Length: 407
Image (cartoon, rainbow, N blue to C red; front, side, top):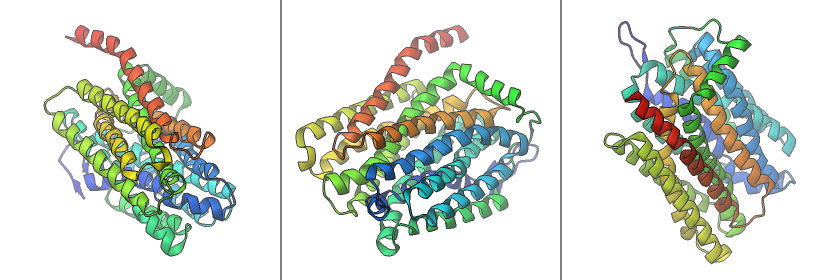
């Protein structure tokens, strides 16, 4: 499962990197079709069940700050294996939960473990592949990132109907164990230059501060984070929209998941094609324009048809948003990681922290302000899309001056 080149960093198999990156997003969404059932079974509100996603993302955001320095010090493979074990522990805690508070705790632990995959995959790509190849590789890996949350609701729908909502977390426990086994056996160590000082507080805090001061990193990390926030807002909002607002059968959630998958694949595929012909900045700008247009269209649909609208009327603008996200995320990832070498693990951690932190805030806002209305998703989509456009407009003059000075 590796392609070893004499004297060079071994290249991990893209299939294994895709699995590492996709287990977390799959765990995010696999249980979402069961949210209405869980609210009833746990004698709590749908908004409280939505908070389980915010807990997952919060744990993921904070833990990513640690995984990068750990992998810079001890290696990518060992830290990835540890993360898989933490994910297994959190999955078992959720499996054994029968009230909302233990479930929230289990989801927090799950998030702490699940985020290792994205951090280590990002850092391994930075270790093993040339700068020219990274954008295309990130596009492929982010296609897996999109596929996993789209498959998750499909699996979750059948699991909850056949075995009850606890089965979703039993599936995640099995996947966690498989991930640990595959990582330990097949993931080559790509960090061949261990940093003995990576875990010293002054060292890794200094790395984070230097990373944050890198304008390109901060800009593209925030842009990607706004897009990831839209992804998670859609994932927790879709079951509510389908079942509680539009009054449709829970199986319709699979239609939403399929539409999201197709839209993201179209966006990521377009990104891969455009990256050969157009500059990254133009692709990202196009993606944000598409995202904002889809968000406005979604709000217009909510205003015009409300609860009387058919599912297709909401799916089309949501799909447009995900095409835009597919254009932005791969390019923003590559550009954010480009300036870093030995500190790639720390940069990947901070990138994940910013992305998951923004997503956690977005999902927590949806949970706290939950009204069970058609306006929940449009408002959050618009807020995140507009924030990304503002960041782009603020930083564009400075980036243009830097590019001119470099020439």
